[in-house]
Image 1 (spheres, rainbow, N blue to C red):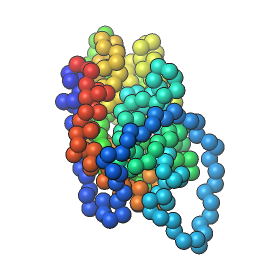
Image 2 (cartoon, rainbow, N blue to C red):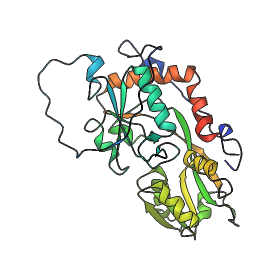
Image 3 (cartoon, rainbow, N blue to C red):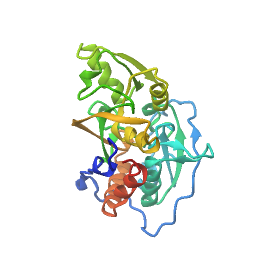
Image 4 (tube, rainbow, N blue to C red):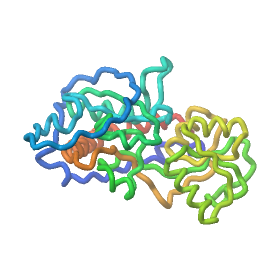
Length: 297
């Protein structure tokens, strides 16, 4: 965050709705052992959701999971520092990965990560996985087709440029005349596409499947700037000191990330919210922010 300690820019604001954590809420024994490490698997081909039957409803403890005793999570690996691979190329690591393990520990279940492309990731909820934990911004449009947990981290939209950038950017409108990169189908893509469509900004947009490609383009001089989540920008600044700088961060419209679940899975939503509340009270999120974003100056 313009080379300051990221914890100052990333106050984790979690406005927990405790009224949503009622008698159906499932919480794990706090003495539960650590969830074993998991490797990510590729998402299977989507199948048609089976038609509802008149069979009695299953117990809440198992019906909220596709597989008994396992929280299956959709993620898009390649969105550091939230989701990425360790040096072995198979082990998922990142802010959301740590959160997922801590969440599963509270729920008393194991974790299975399903790596899938961001474009279409929400269609897999309830089909390929129980939920998506992958830097998902809570929006009113998305809330029409899925449930969200209480937020677990704040985010803003930001503009990142190379360290030797000579201009000044104090608003998104200052991007007129520039070539910018965004990740396809993200809130950054939606934001900049709206600016261009309304004539507020006249710029060339390169929409990439991966945010990593955006920063590669920036470093190679193919684009002038990257518009992305401020949390992602912070991670890149932390891991690439002296290479990139954050030229602008729009704090007038904060975003919040949440766990996305099927519309009807209110039991899982209640359980996840209770676990988030516990993790917040225990200081987990503050520690996780410091771990993944605190290295930047």
